[in-house]
Image 1 (cartoon, rainbow, N blue to C red):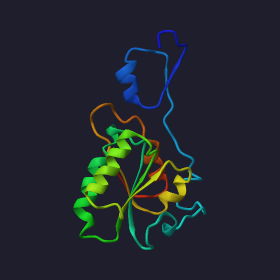
Image 2 (tube, rainbow, N blue to C red):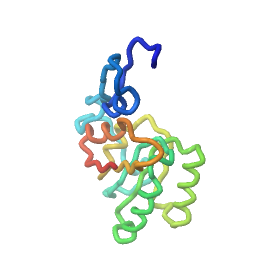
Image 3 (spheres, rainbow, N blue to C red):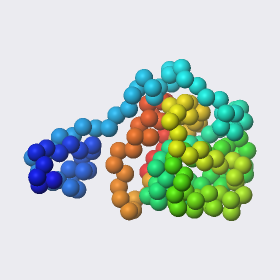
Image 4 (cartoon, rainbow, N blue to C red):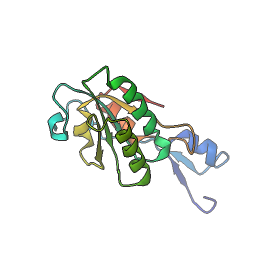
Length: 166
């Protein structure tokens, strides 16, 4: 950054942490396409297309499946409530071809929840998937690194999905 003419940051924490005394900084906050990510977007996907019965309540997370995202805690929490609420499904969207994702799948198998916790892998139809969500959860941990500006959370909120994040 010492040789850069100018530095673009996406949140104010970046300035405080990495460039506290630099005058070469411009903040450009993250954003989403509010035409694509809105309740009015006509594109649809049925829950049955992803293996979930109609009228189910879908808890969804869309994330880069890495340990900082804390998905194992979401799986644990889901397992605590899913026996009493049979209409709940947990949908995990993100590249599931890595060691952490395999660990998560093993946790799901151990908890015998494979029928109600679905790993959809990396998808390009997120705006359609979000329409199926009852609630969006992003359980990022406060270790390893900080969450910068999670685009998936912004997309869920723009889509009108109630969102819970840490």
